[in-house]
Length: 382
Ligand SMILES: Cc1cc2nc3c(=O)[nH]c(=O)nc-3n(C[C@H](O)[C@H](O)[C@H](O)COP(=O)(O)OP(=O)(O)OC[C@H]3O[C@@H](n4cnc5c(N)ncnc54)[C@H](O)[C@@H]3O)c2cc1C
Image (cartoon, rainbow, N blue to C red):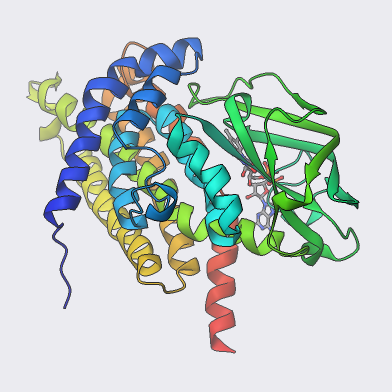
């Protein structure tokens, strides 16, 4: 049976997240965009309300919510501001490899910390020379007794400036390609870690993105996730959980842009009529509403599939790619509906256009999502 209705609990979660987005996130959004100030108090309030780390299993003190519920919450937060929702989402991304491949002791320690206090974590995979091509990363982890010594550099790491701990992907066997990579949990205060400056990005300026240097950083062997050589699998498996959530963020942003465009088109008049009476504008807005619905359904399918314990890699990539491309187009069309006002910082849609671009880049670009979808399609035919 197909049923698109939400349970009472799911509706309540969505309302809770919407209330938080409307009353706390949105009013602060422009300030953090203009100043780049990290919205720590907002993150802490989200944590207090149980809207952060929602997928940490109950045995480690979390709510143990599914990816589907995470997507409902994520869409609302992103409707408020994606600079702020990305911070919350980056915690989920850092936790995912640990949930997928950590030992009981590792989960108790590092997931437990995030339950006990409003701390941030970060997912450190990308490097200055390795983004889409993860297998070419150069950070090295060399085993010396009961520690691994890490040397290397990461780039574009969300939450890096505030992270209590990092998931770090490094090469333990540099000649073995993606099979030579291993994942580690690295304490943020480990000697030998140097953080770069907060990057000034096109959008999502509330979010803290930095480079990180690792120089002779000693990581206890007990912090290795899984076996040596399993890091690639853990880092990629994490995306099956988080890409539907990133996609839900794109849906939230698109919904915000669409709502602004709808309101404006109903009130702004040209040639003696509201903009909405001009078919060219009405059709732009009709396309927005249609594509948001379609993207949300893909998000729900990708999230539902993994919650059923089934492999969702293709749907996760479809949702991420479709929602990201859709959000960027809708944000651009919303600017168009606003005309000159759309280009101005006094109106909300220029920020949405700037913020929307990153959805086509982080957690795998739109090109890489298509590479994955094609691989799944052609692989399935063999
Ligand atoms: C604000 C921000 C936050 C981020 N947060 C994180 C984070 O928390 N953790 C983390 O590890 N990383 C993070 N990233 C990194 C992000 O995931 C990468 O930037 C992204 O994967 C692309 O890698 P790249 O920048 O090296 O681009 P490249 O890999 O150099 O790609 C450049 C262009 O070429 C295209 N391209 C590359 N290879 C192919 C191919 N085979 N086929 C077709 N097209 C291709 C890409 O799609 C892209 O358009 C973040 C990035 C940004 C900007």
